[in-house]
Image (cartoon, rainbow, N blue to C red; front, side, top):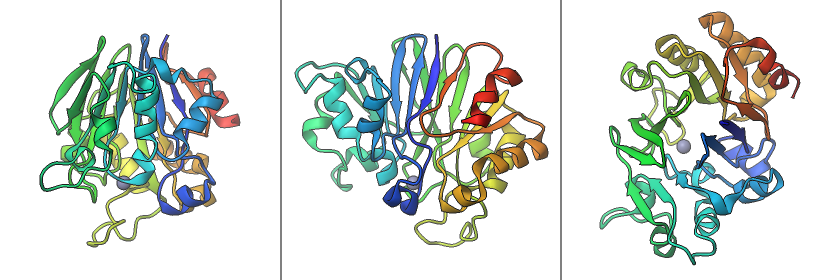
Length: 274
Ligand SMILES: [Zn+2]
């Protein structure tokens, strides 16, 4: 069985500080392979409440060096390596997280060296976690080393991470069955400006991504305050109307069964009703 568990559907600084939506990231269980994606603040606590077996994690993947994506990564490495007693699991992150001679690391050396394998990811790179093939994709974000991830399992699951729209970014995710979009903004008025929080996805970007990628199902998450106030479900409906692709807004703690027909309406009702 394969599933996606949303342990936090919030993103951006105010949502993170207030925890109006949790920021615990995403847990994927794909044909028995356990992957934790972008463990932001609250990942450990939310995962424990949801009874996620953190000692059995096969991989922890981080897309970039912002706190709402990596805050709990080190403590999850401790869980995956059973208290840094067993050299096991994969830890994958870009150089902006792992560090180099020029770039300071965001994760202590102790944790970088604890897993069986620590991979410095770059766009275009592919690696395997058990039987699941993972592809890293380019993203256009304020951390220039940000990567998106694509998982080839029972279904192809695409996670472009924090990025604004570009045809090049979208192309790398074509053919995805399930597309998970970090739709932070309702309207991103800063998109073309050179400021720290400019390069985040808004609803217009999400519509463009869905139109280009044409997934079976789009799940939006990583909501900033504007999205939360507007009601993410209303925005999911708007995206669906504009694209003709089934779109849902994830809620904290939701479990999505990856198997079967993604776009089948019955299976998605729980998303609508919480
Ligand atoms: Zn970010």
